Image 1: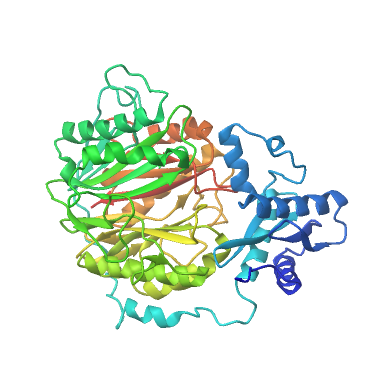
Image 2 (image 1 turned 30 degrees about the vertical axis):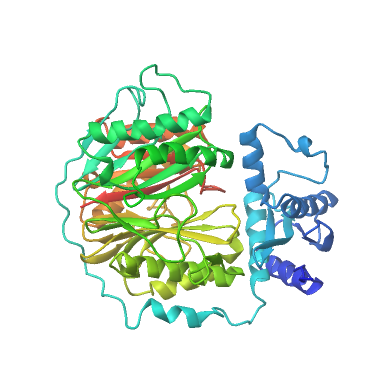
Length: 549
């Protein structure tokens, strides 16, 4: 009978010790708790001065994370979107206070850790994360235990960074608005072309003839696929020019509705774009939004990797001209088409599968401009960063990166956009930094992509934390995008797509006001996709940019 992983007292002591060590000298008294996979208490500590309520809440947070199998912040967001409350569980141990994190091992939940009492739930969660990270590896253990897998990334140093990228071309955006797809006064066009690339904003499942959004999700999906075709053709392109389509869906329950319209639009199994599906709460009444990126005048070449073939009818990726787009890259052993076991091994395998994919596309990992990383558990981010730095060492060219906390069956998934050929440069925003050792932006040839750009006041004292409030964050965020584009030799006219990560759709009026100031002409703006995921704590909005220089 297979042994089941569980939390030992030594594990719990190590986690709580790390969280205590991460506390500030003047931290308000708080309590910590670690529970096992059943929610039973393993170890609890309270600092002098912490109240009995703090102790109870720390235990409830840890219990909820283990019992529900989700961090309490994600749980709160989900039940709010579903219109439910904790009362639906008939369990008074469950809470939506955040600061409770799941603890994983071998891709299974083995318990939870909770912190309460600092006076700031975001701070509670940071301390809980310090404890969760300590559970990944005991202190002093060698990192990168599977390093033998990864020397294949490169047999020699990567290509040198160019001192500065070539000046951007004075690209003039061309925009398309499809009547009925979005409101006439919508903040952004439906499709934008800059240079040789085109980008759509979110394509909804509205009926273009009636202007009605159907209640039936299946009908919305069919409409959205057909609206995508109509939009792309109205802009003078073909669906054969599309490199990637992302399905943003309101619920994982809607996945069965995807393929009907997909196969109608792309019937040829040997001629389909890359595809990724991401679930987060969409605006009320919407079941799906499609967002596409394409290359004008270029035909697709599908990319398939033996052992990585998707169960759904889509390729591993597509190449159009010099541009490469991947579908989701999963941590499967290519010899068996089965997931490898263990978080470290999955991270290693996923990055190596990315390498294999890029080689099948005719390039290397040094041709990746942008990488998205989806992690089930942020406690494993430090290990992922170590592997990232083996793929793209400090001092050489590094791909831009965004990491999402995203509940899923395995520990990690990746997705990349690449550009084969051209000078490689990295770019920063003076006064704005990242917590991880990654660049703010990466450029290969004419393609320039950013990681997460926040509403940091670059003239202020803290280059990592955004200013308070959505108005200030929207104001500084879009101006930081401008600074980044200019550091790469371009202007805001070169920006084709901005993806906004937000916490609350109610913040959009303040964001739109900042856009109106930056882009006064509504017919000369980038495309835009709004995602209610990927930001938390003090961050109300984060900007991600793609430009063609």
